Image (cartoon, rainbow, N blue to C red; front, side, top):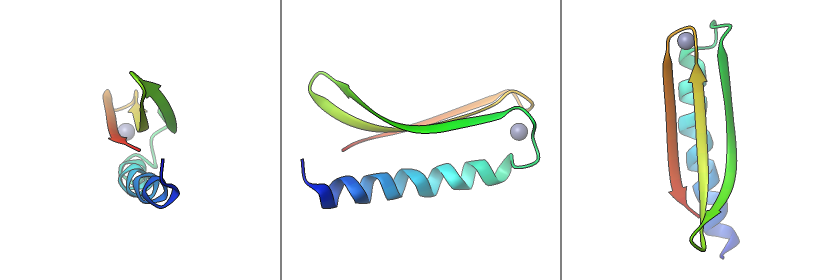
Length: 64
Ligand SMILES: [Zn+2]
């Protein structure tokens, strides 16, 4: 795995994650995280946001 590509992927995820968080900044029910998971030998960066106030859940994953 190439560190430069990994950094670019994580930066991409963080960017869309922050955009989503900004929309729900005033909500009490906001939760979110960015994690790396490995499935079938493929490593994914996963950004996840959930807002129970607005009843929305968002997930975006990119291969690292
Ligand atoms: Zn919300």
